[in-house]
Length: 141
Image 1 (cartoon, one colour):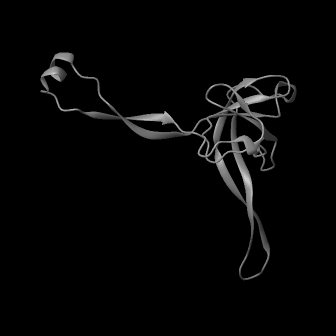
Image 2 (image 1 turned 135 degrees about the horizontal axis):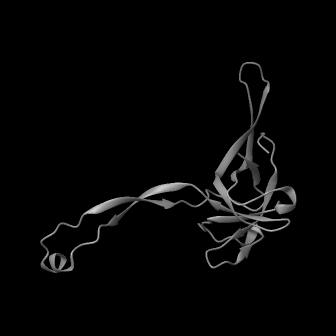
């Protein structure tokens, strides 16, 4: 399963409270998703820890000189990993990360006295899929 053809499709998005979004019309503005349900599972030898790319087709592009079609631009929604499988479906969780900062823990007495500067440390956090929608395509990578 490592070619360029889609292997599956996003059939639902998993909200933070574990409710499913099955219809794009029900999506709230600026809603973010970290997990999606796809329509392929154990019956097709899908297992946990497999990596996928979720994408949608954008506009068709043509070569300006020859006029030849270059195909459709792929709008990448994100990379993910299979985290749960069932017979005919699987859960894909975002594997993208982004940098964030958090305040370093301080000694309680020093923090009370205000003698230590508030230092921050860089951490990696899971990033949501970008603009993911029900109907997006899935390719195993």
